Amino acid sequence: MNQSVADLRQDYTFAGLEPTDLNPNPVKQFETWFKQALLSEILEPNAMTLATATPDGKPSARIVLLKGFDERGFVFYTNYESQKGKQLIANPQAELVFFWDRLERQIRIEGKVSKVSPTESDAYFQSRPKSSQIGAWTSNQSQVISSREVLEQKQQELESYYAEADILPRPEHWGGFRLEPETIEFWQGRPSRLHDRLVYYLQADGTWLIKRLAP
Image 1 (cartoon, one colour):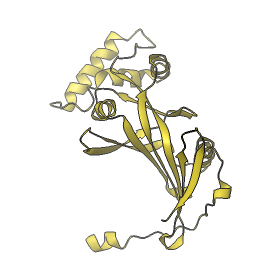
Image 2: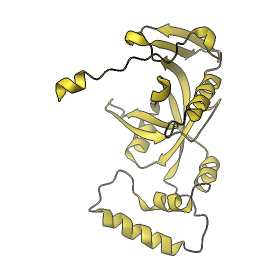
Image 3: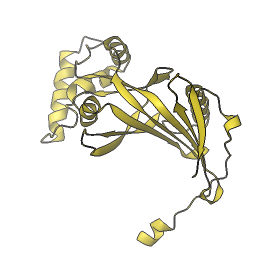
Image 4: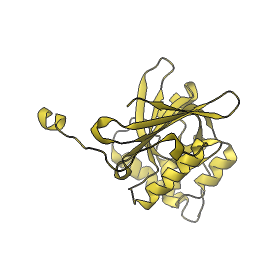
């Protein structure tokens, strides 16, 4: 089994990437690539790895969904009392990673994280399907539970309690985070593992500097 895993290889030949191909604004460049990912019918192109760490440097990572982006940063939502929520509050630095295999592309985004406004969290929470709103109330995310039946019973109780309501109030422990990028790397797979890696670095004056990295 170890040998067969080691032998797995994919030669990337889809495209190359040059600095002249890039928009000077990395958020605009992300938008371009994201639209191309949508057109490629990638399953959940907004799925991304979120890497966080405790204040003493113990890392953890998981997949979450991007729910918005603009010049201010990249937004996702979670339970603030979950493992990732607590880590982001205690150590507000994180990294996001997108991998779109059909396009042979990866994007890495590093930066500072802060909570979005309660108004933004309210608006997004109440735009979700009712079942998802109930789910946010049901799960004490990252907490140990004795069985799945505990979740299902609480879900049924909440469905009964809110049977006549179309929109639920947002739990205070649930809301959004925004990652404000400081570096954004665009990676394009190339043959022989000589991939193209172009990175935007945020400068003190708010402009972006683009550098090429060795693969």
